[in-house]
Image (tube, rainbow, N blue to C red; front, side, top):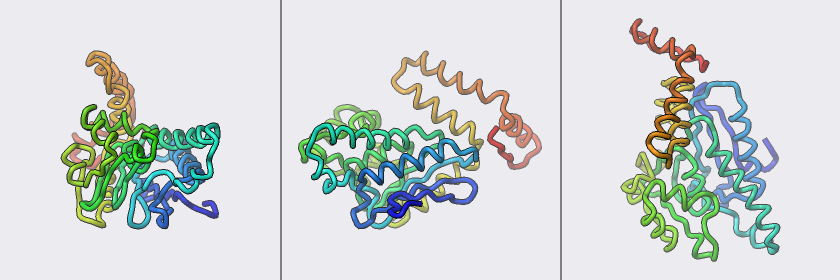
Length: 263
C-alpha cells in the first residue's frame, strides 16, 4: 500500500476481490497516481493463482467516481502531455475491462464522466436509488475517451447513447435501470452489500466456467451469429477436460455441493 492509497485492494473471504476507490474528498476523482494504482492492482488480480470468482468495485464515501481530476489536468497545457496522461487512463480502463473474473460496480452517489466509464468497463452494475450517471464531457469541450460512447451504445443502442452523450445530461438510477445500464437497483447505502451478494452467487459456481462465459460473450459481441457460436464452442470445449467439469457431474449425481478447484 502506498503512502497515498487512492485505490485499495482487499480480499473478501476466499471468494471475492474488492477494489475500493479511495479519494472521498474529491468524490473519488482519478488522477495519474490513482490510475497507476488501479492498473497495478488489476495486474495483481490478473496474475494471481487463486480462484476468487469475482471482483467488486466501489467508492469510498458518498460517490463512486466523478471522473478525471480536472484540477490536475488544468496544469497540463501541452497536447503531448495530455495524450501521455490519457494513455495511462486508457490502460486503467482496459486493465479493469480485461480482468478474467466477472466485475461488479457498486454505485452510490455520482458515476460521472470517467467514473461512469469505469462502471461501464465492469460486467455488471449495482446502484442505489439516489445514484446518478452521465457523460458530461461535452460540456467541457471534450468527449468520452474511456470507452463511454461505445460501451453505452452497446447497452442502450446508438440513438439513445448519442442523446445521452451529446446533451451531457444526467440519468437517475431508475432511468439507468430501465435502460439496462444498471442490473440491480437497491436502497441507498446498500449497493456494496447487494454487489457482494451477487458476487457470492457467482462464487458458488465453477470459476473456470464463469470466466469462460464472460470471455465468450465479450469476444462474440458484434460478430455474426455463426462466428459468435464458434467462439462459444471454443470456450465450451476448453472446459470439457477440467477437473471442475468432472466434479460438477459427480456432485450432481451424489446430491451434494460441488467443491470447485479451479482446474
